[in-house]
Amino acid sequence: MLSFHTTAPPAYHFLTALVVFDPPVVVAVVVVVVNEDEGRRRRRRRRRRRKKKKNKNKNKMKKKKMKKKKKKMKKKNNNKNKNKNKNKNKNKEKKKKKEKEQEKKRRKRKRKKDKEEEEEEEEEEEEEEEEEEEEEEKEEEGVDTEKYKRNTKKKKERKEHEENKKRKTFTT
Image 1: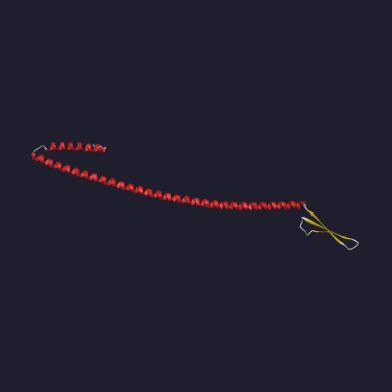
Image 2: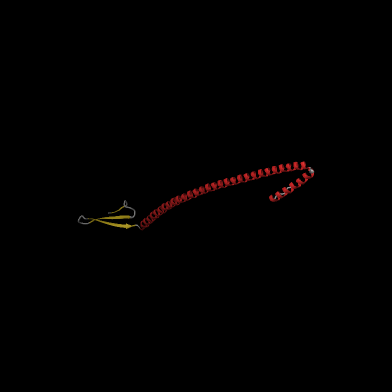
């Protein structure tokens, strides 16, 4: 009697033969047949599994690398922004300082100018007073006042002309 056991894995087929002899002896012969296709399939599966594992590890490493890279970039950007803000603040402070100094200089110039104007006004007033005194003296002495006025006017114009020449501004 010959029978095949198909419950075994597909790679192996067990062939059992039951032979009956004169004395009741049971002989069991087991033949193992390895299917070539099955071996190829197994190797292919192994290869696939290895490849999958390799890719999984690769992807894991990639993820790790990317995470590290992102962290590094974040740190870099943070530092960059910090420095940017620091420089911005520095520039603002510099600008403020500069403006302050300019304002100081402006005020100083204005004060100087005002002082000069006041001095000029005082000088003019003194000159006018002197002229008036001279006129009065001349009148007392009996000098021609109109002629004197013309001469003083000319003197005054000459003086103004020289002052303007000093300032480099000419008036007619």
